[in-house]
Image (cartoon, rainbow, N blue to C red; front, top):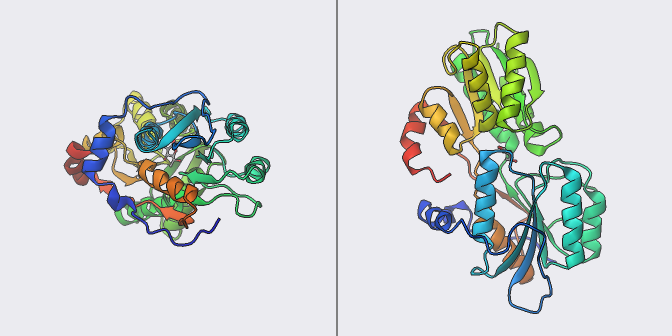
Amino acid sequence: MARHTFARTALAALSAATLFALGACSSEPPSSGDDTGSGDGGDELISVGFSQVGAESGWRSANTMSIKDALTEENGFELSFSDAQQKQENQISAIRNYIAQGVDVIAFSPVVETGWDPVLEEAKAAGIPVVLTDRAVETTIEDAYVSFIGSDFVEEGRRSGEWAVEQYDGEGYKVVELQGTTGSAPAIDRQQGFADAIAGSDLEIIDSQTGDFTRDGGKKVMEGFLTAHDDIDLVFAHNDDMGLGAVEAIEAAGMKPGEDIKIITIDGVKDGMQALADGKFNYIVECNPLLGPDLAEIIKATVAGEPVEERIVTHDEAFDQEAAKEALPDRQY
Ligand code: GYE
C-alpha cells in the first residue's frame, strides 16, 4: 500500500467545539470491551481491533475515550477494544485474536518499545494493516505499520528540562525523577530529553526510578526518595499521575509541594492542571491524548487505498501556574 502524503487535517481539526461534541457522546461506545469484532467485510463498516495499554493514568482514560468516540458505528467503524493492563503478553494475544478474526485494521499503543516483531510479522502475513498510536516500537520488520500518530516525547522531556534550567540554574538544585513504565517509549524519550536539556547546568539528578505511570507508583517511589534524601529540590515526573502521587508523599512528610519541593510533570490532564493552578505543581508540558479523530482518518484512508502520512506528531502546549488558571475552565479532559 502506498504511503506518502496524507493531506493532514492535523489537530487543527480538534477544535474545542469538536472535542466537546465528541466528549458528549462518550458514555456509549458501540462495541467495546471484549475482542468481539466480526471482521467479515460483508458490510460497510470498517472493523478495527484496538489494543490499549491499560487504564494507568488520567491521560490513558482521555485517550481511550477519544478513540471510542471517534471509532463509532455512526462514523463507519466496528470497534473491538481491549485493555492489556500494562502487560505486553496481553497485547500480543489481543492482536493475535484480531488477526484470527480478520479485522480490516489493527491499531495499538505498545506498552514497551521492543518485542513486537513476531506479531507484527503475523499481521503483515495476514495482510492486515497496523496503525500505531501514542507510543513507538523498535522493529526490524519492513513496513511493519502504515502510520504512527503521537507526541514527540523527547521534545516533551527537553521542554521540561529547559524550563527547569531557565528557572533554577545557579541554585544547585537536586532533582529526583519519577520515570514512566520501564522500556516504554515515553519513559525512555522523556528521560533522554530532560537529561539533554539540563546537561551543562548545575541541576543534578540524584535519583531516578520507575513509578509505572501510576499515582500509587509515584507516591511509593517518592516516599522512598524522601527517606533516602533530605535535600530534594525538584521532582521531574514523567506524567501528571506520578506527580500527584509525589504531592501526597511530600504533604505526608510535612512539606509543601510546589514550594519546598518543586514539581514538573508531563500530560496536562485536568487533575494535573488543577494541581498546577493550586500551586502544588510548578510546570506542565502537555501531551495531547486526543488521538481518536486522526486515527479514524488514517484508518479510512488506509482502507480506501489512499496514501497516508507515516508519522503524525501531535501538537503540545506547556503551562505554568498562571497559564493553568486560565486554561482550566475550558479543559476537556
Ligand atoms: O504520558 C502517561 C500514560 O504514552 C504518552 O502514558 C503516554 C503516557 C502518558 O500512562 O500518562
